[in-house]
Length: 584
Ligand code: DGT
Ligand code: CA
Ligand code: CA
Ligand code: ZN
Image 1 (cartoon, rainbow, N blue to C red):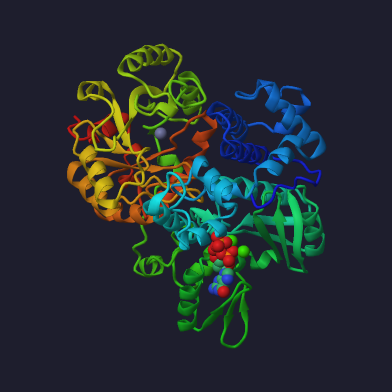
Image 2: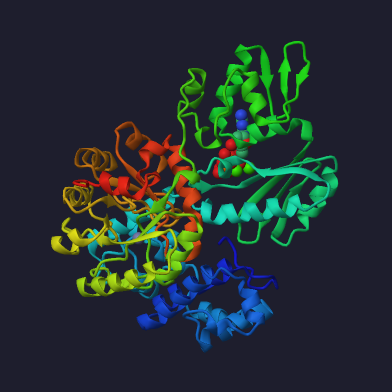
């Protein structure tokens, strides 16, 4: 992330090793190496990022080469990194190819070839230099560029700048916070500990972690916190607050407080700021001043709230769930007794979008099904990619039939789970579908998604998705905006129009629970709820561990004020299938 600590001998996390390999992949691509070498690093990086075991342990056991995609050469490089804290291959590579070019590669419309041309022909190695050259009209002269490319690159740089790059998605923030809270909870002096802030509200991206600990020994707790192995640098440490940078770059605040004030503190530091300001105004009207310490009466006497519920109750309000605290009308709704009943994770009975090794998943159908069953699911639809998506080894109709045979075999090994066959069919650039109608008609559930030509203009890409929704075979649209949080902006698709046509045609819209997606987003979930669109929450699992992401999807639904009645996969299977368009 923000730094790599190449020199410092430290324990590398799986994500850090993976990030380094991704970076190497980018650099060798810019250098002009053959594509399969580039892909080899990416594949190894993917496996390590999703390993589910500490890479340091695997290395100590001498089993690096058992990781899919890790051969002798990459294993040797990882060994060197984990044992010495640096990788000579990386040092040599960055002496040849400036590492800042990785940032240049992030510019939309700049691939390795263009990055190399700008670097070798014009000596450009940073985004700032590329921007200056584009503004000066120097890029258009490069072979294969032209004025149009130059303008696109400039626009791309502007969109990069708009992105808030220091934020992380929930897939990074949530495990980091859980580890810190877990470590603090083990200290004998800590009575209560929790994370607050944007993470507790399940915002799609997180600026920093805000951790609270109730204790009578703040000095001891702060000292222990500074010593945690996750901590890279202590940025500030006082009597009640310590701020640190964690390995990987994310920053975290720890605040210590008296247990008797837990409720007001948790309320205050959960935010958001606008919600807090409204709440404080409401308190003032009732003759209280509300702070993180207490509710104060006009005569200066304090009411201490040990529980958050007490803060709201003192102001005449029911408890407001953290996911609603965005000043999107929740205080008004609470005053009117009209807070929505929110969907919860227990309401979800199954999923209709997941992958297996038949396309780009990392686990067999059997493993995926057994995991879903262990999660208590009633049903699971295997929906591998369609043929056109070459990178994901999408299925042809013939392989789809072979897959059906395997699904039938796996069914015999299941107790309760009902396993179905579907597809995630590609919506092609013109809005046609990547399988013929008669193939789609055979499947139990059809999710249609856009993965290619994501940069079409608003009208084209909207027309494309709308055309797919008008197909009688398309039951749901997968990850409708195509965004990848902190990495790629959403496509230009007009989601309001998509929701309008979804309501009209009875097409379900997915809330994809992968933390890098959370797509449909909370704002549009709210419009979907208001316009009666049926939503469906899927983890889009590519391996068993991905089913754990469900809570992020459910939280996104809750942030959009969705109740169980708005989410189709809270229904039993028969009712879900009946809700499909033309379903009976
Ligand atoms: P982030 O970190 O940018 O993802 O967002 P938050 O919401 O975690 O914001 P952060 O870390 O700056 O502060 C944590 C909470 O503390 C915030 O949600 C509300 C509360 N807070 C911070 N500053 C203020 C303030 O000036 N006034 C009020 N009323 N509350 C504040
Ligand atoms: Ca925060
Ligand atoms: Ca903070
Ligand atoms: Zn998918």
